[in-house]
Image 1: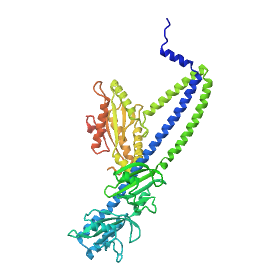
Image 2: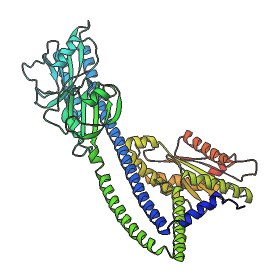
Image 3: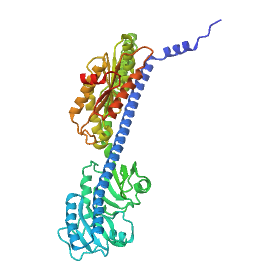
Image 4: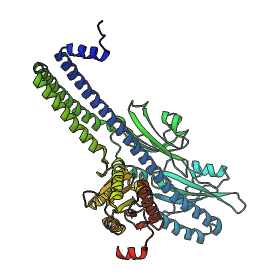
Length: 528
C-alpha cells in the first residue's frame, strides 16, 4: 500500500517546480509596489500633518486676533465708563466741561487706538471732546449709536458700524454708552472712536499668504474690516455667507475647511467670537498655499522613487538572469537577510528615541528601568532617578507659540543630556514637558548634585518667560535613590517616589529640587 504524501510535502514540491526566474520577477514587482505604496503613504501622512499644523496656526491666529479686539475695545469702554460717571456726577457746567476736556485729551494720548472721545447732550449737540478746538454747530443726532441709546434704557456699551469721522474723515469704529439724568431719563451719549487702521496694522503682522484673509465683524454679520482690505469690505453684510450661516452663528469658535463660493479657493477657516463684545473674527489660509511646500517635496520624492524603481527593475533583470546559479542565489539571500537585520536594528534604535528632543523615549526608559532595577538588586547598589518638569510650560506655549515651546524643550533637553555622564546613565523624555534621568550606581547625594546642576544651568539660560513669576524659564525636579530589595520593592515605586518629590518641588514654589527619602534633609541640602 502506498503511503499518501502529506500536505506540507506537496507544497514544497509545487514551489520547487515553479520557475525560479518567475519567483524572482514576482519578488521584484512586489518590492517596487511596496516602495510606491510606502512613499505614497508617507506623502499622504505628511500632507495630513501639514494641514493639521495649518489648522492649529489658524486657530492660534484667530485666538490672538479675538483677544486683541477684546482688549482694544475694553480699554476704550473703560474710558467711557469713567467718562459717563464723571458727567453724571459733576454735571455739564463750563468748569466741569473744561476739566473733562483736559481728561479726554489725556486719555486719547494714552491709548493709541483711540481717534477721539466725545460727549453729546440729549439733542445730539457736542458738549465736549478730546480735540484741541470744538467745531461749531455740529450735531450727531442722526448717528446710529445716538438713535440706539435714545431708544434703549440699558447702560451696556453699543458697538456701531464703521463710519467716517466728521472731525477728520478717517474710518472709525464707534463704542458708546448712554448718559442719564438723575431721574433716569436720556441725557446724552458718551462716545469713543477707534481708528480702523489700528486693527489693520495689527493684522499686518500675520503671515497669511496671497489668498489668506482676516475678518473682523459684528455678530449680526456686518464686516468691520478685512485683510486684504477690499473696496467694499467696510460695512459689507456677510450674514448670508456659508461660514457665517453654518458655523459662526452656531458656535463660539471652530475650524473648518470649505471652498469659497466667491473665488472657488479652498481655505482653512478658524473663527472665534470676542469674549466680552458682540464681535467675531475669522482667520483663513489658502489650502493650496499651505500645501505648496509639501507638493514640491512630493514631486521630489516621486522623482527619487521613480529613479529607485528604475534601478530596482534593472537590478531585478540582472538578478533574474543570474539567479539560475545556485551559489549566487544563496549569496543574494544571505545579503538580503543581513540587510533586513541591519534595517530592523536601525528601526529598533529609532523606536527608542524621541524625535523632538533627541533623548530616549518612554519605551526605552521602561526597558532600562527594569534592567537597572534588577541589576541594582543583584549587586546591592543604589539606583537613582530624577524627574524634571518645565515650570509654567503651558503658559509659555500659550504666550510664545508651540514652535517656541518645542525649541525651549529641546534646549532644556540638551542640558539634561549633558548630565548623562556615564555609559549606564539614561536621559529620557518621559512625556510632554516632563524629562527624567536614570542614574545607576548613584546615591541620593550624587543625584541631588546632578539635579541641582541641571536646574542651575536651565535658570542661567535666562530664556524669557513673562508668564512665570521668575521672568525666565525654570525647571523643578524630584529625586529618589535607594538600594532595592528583592520581593519588597518594584521599579514603579522608584518612579512614584521621584514623581512625588517633583510634586513637592512644584508645591513649594517651583524652580527647586526636592527629594523623597526620609533622611536628614538639612544636612543633605547643605552638602549639595
